[in-house]
Image (cartoon, rainbow over all chains, first blue to last red; front, side, top):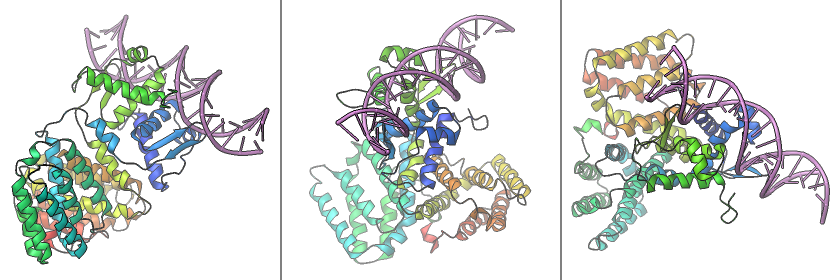
Length: 230
Length: 230
DNA sequence: AAATATTTGTCCGTATGTATC
DNA sequence: TGATACATACGGACAAATATT
């Protein structure tokens, strides 16, 4: 084990292989070096190497076949979610609150760029989503998907891929938990969304930003003390 | 390997252990059976068992300690966020710039809360890091570690674990890339850091926020058009 | 088509460091 | 202090699946 960091060998090897993939810019379908090559390259035993690679395989990052090798797969975090989260978590879990605060702050931080980049067709799309939300209001169904689509659409043109994946990840977690609380302030949320769309439709930036602020000011997790904190 | 399903042993074992945890209703802090016991229970070799358990450990589901055992850990999204960045990386590399922009915006968004929560000892620690940075300035060494420690310390008391986890993840990726570019504006960065520490030492919030703004305004990846975007 | 090489899958044994009693 | 239990890490061996010649 690494004396300095206390990090175990197989965890180090996991990170090293991940770095190797990133730095070499390996794409899905590409082959990783063989176990033997990696053993020599990293100077560890085959067991330790396999503990790292098999972790990747179980998570869905790679796929190994005897006689062929280990290929990089398209990676999404679904499996990790399902397993890290397999203990029932309640809404009161501080991690959930922390996560939502991150999303809100990011949205507020990027809202100006979002406004500048949104196209007419995006705004039309937002309007369509609003129709869906209203139509299914009484049904109390599918609200999460629409809410998610609404917010993701707003920032779809910002062009920051990390922002996109991060927001998707947070929505994923959100989808797995707060299922019942979703309908508490539902009508209020609809009004807030409506205000956002209207401001966009008339291309009023000030109104848009005010509507975004109002939307996020209502949440229970919001602790926005002043304007400078966005 | 299971002939019917084609599922490899270590993947089966992973599922079996997960089922064991769920069926026994194990809670965070509870001990899993020892490796030896699981080996007997599941009828597999030690290697296969470890490949499954180490997957769980790397994902953050369990934590193993020699002499003690393997304990079930609490719900924790650190690993998820560490790999959101990884999962987002595609064929082009502007992802790095996107990532850094996320970090900068988060720091600016949280800087007021950071200021409010920082203790005297933290500021003393920041001063110590600055001494280190200056001492190793001519050596052109260890800048990443110090820079990272500097920024992480500023936000260490904010109390948002997702923020910490996310920032660490971004620093991790950053460490893998820009190795030579680090020294371009190094002296300028040192001045900016110095201004931040001074503002904190005299407890001047306005100066602190101004120094943070100036720090992030210099980066090549910064596209901060106006104050409201923070 | 058959033999051979390559690569991953699985098992075993042994030594070491660490936590607990 | 010593003894025990446990995970960490290494190495060797053979089987199974695939690729290559």
